[in-house]
Length: 198
Image 1 (tube, rainbow, N blue to C red):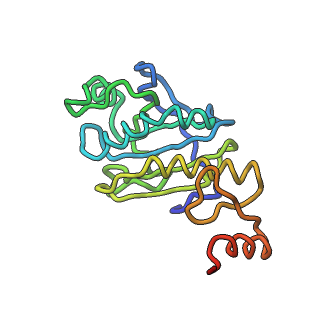
Image 2: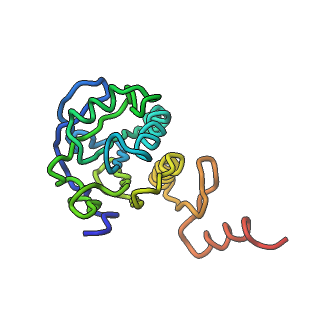
Image 3: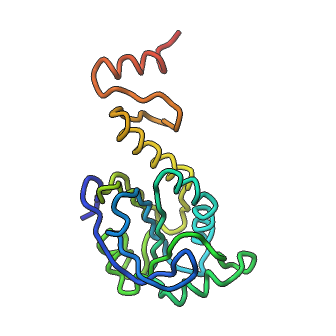
C-alpha cells in the first residue's frame, strides 16, 4: 500500500511483552479512543534500536498525559523481547520499559504496514494513529537512522491541536504556538505576522 495516512490502521492481535513484564496479547483495536504511536524497529540486541526504545520510555508519561500510548514492534519472539528487557541497560539491554513490545515473528504486521525489508526485518516505521483508528502521520527511516522522539511528541501535539481548534499547524509549529486558519485570509494573516519583512 505504501502510504497509510488517511487510511484505517491495519489491525492486529499478537503476543507481546507487556509493560509489567508479563507475556500476553496486544490488540490494536483495544486502544480505540486513545491516540497510538506505533513504531517498528529492526531487531532486539542491536545498536540504534535500544537508544530509540529508551528514549520513548523516558518520555512515556509525556505521551500518556496526552491520551497517547506507545507500542513497539519487531520480528523477534516474545522470549527475545523478554530477555532483552531483562538485560541491564549498561550491558546493552533496555531494562523494564513501560510500554509493550509486540512479537511479529511471522512478519505479517510489518507487511501490513509496508515496512518489511527484504522479508527479513522491519524498517524504522512510525505511525501516529488517531482515536478512531486512522493513520494521521507516518515516518519511515532506513536502518541506521534513529528517529526523534521529540518530533513524535510534537506530531501528537499537532494532531490534537487540529482536532481541538480546527486550525492547521504550519511549519515548525510546536505546543503553545499559534495555528493557522485554513483560508486565503488565514494564510495571509499568518504569513504576514511571521515572514513579512519589517
